[in-house]
Length: 213
Length: 247
Figure 1 (cartoon, rainbow over the protein chains, first blue to last red):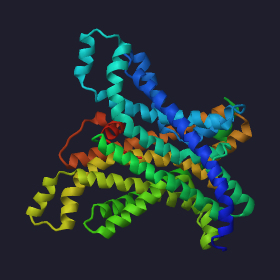
Figure 2 (figure 1 turned 135 degrees about the horizontal axis):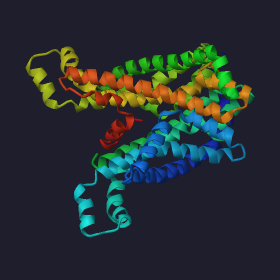
Figure 3 (figure 1 turned 45 degrees about the horizontal axis):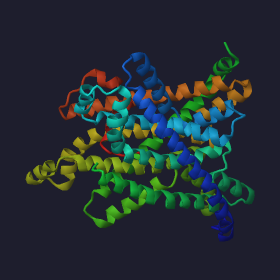
Figure 4 (figure 1 turned 90 degrees about the horizontal axis):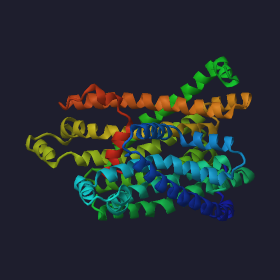
């Protein structure tokens, strides 16, 4: 029982902040992958052929119902030659794409039926229908929900430490093990998370209200 | 049969023990989370400023710091700081319970607030006490709304249990990892593990659908047997469309 060592806390803070940059990078790139891939899945899910929609839905349901940690560790064990950070970003992105695609789906469904009919009446091509009419309306509605998923992805980036990505928790854990200062290392890492995520969620809530949800 | 599956069936008791640890962590964690959701959620709709404030702070704290860090803090940081040490399984249960309890509190708050205002007024007009009003009028209606969101949270909690492997509780993931190390069949091992988790998740979803059907029946809302087999995608889309940020 040694209480809280402020010197150790001072030592570990720069390391945690250095790792925080990697955490942010993984979150931003992972969100990007999830946002783009999710949209692709949502559009594919509305394909006219059941040969496309049924397998897509089945794979999504599987990925979404199974643990991210197992997917990460499994991918890292299978692709040993790939950079861990890349594996982490791709796995995070794919995992969250299964969530964001549902968000897009709801957003697309919320576009009034008359808009589709108008496009047909104007004989727009499917491509132009999506690009010029449906997506601009759908995406505006889903932005707050996408933001919420970005925040929850941010809170799951510590998983990347398991596949040796040198992000915040990895640094904290390493320092904790080397100096036997787990208390200071994890307390600081937690505080940094709180300081970063709380204002972001407040912002999202404001945005949600403004968009009239 | 491949090496992995023969090892899997030779070590079935071990696998079963791992499954048991995972299930215990899920169920006990979920029960703690459920209790906390109601305590914090009902505090947040209270008329007392202090109750609302305390609930707000606790919820934001446990949602704002990552579950991963909370678990590690309990396992690594708490013993030197306080002198108390929890078993790995208990660490998991406490961390899962606190974290998902905070998310669940928002679900309870949202559901209670979504019960039409007229129901409160009718209960007041009938001279019901606040407790009676909550128990007989508000909660039965709110409960139906909470179940789909609780199902999502439960599955998310299940999906977090592999974290126990990192704090050396002998859960399902630990056992399968050991079998993988012994047989060297990485792909088979992880796919098996994913399928096991998928089956668990689906079983829990079915149970929750059953619960939802019962709750709806009690309100006089009959639903067909088809709703039992519904996967979570349908409910989730509705939740996100309504702006109910569950996570």
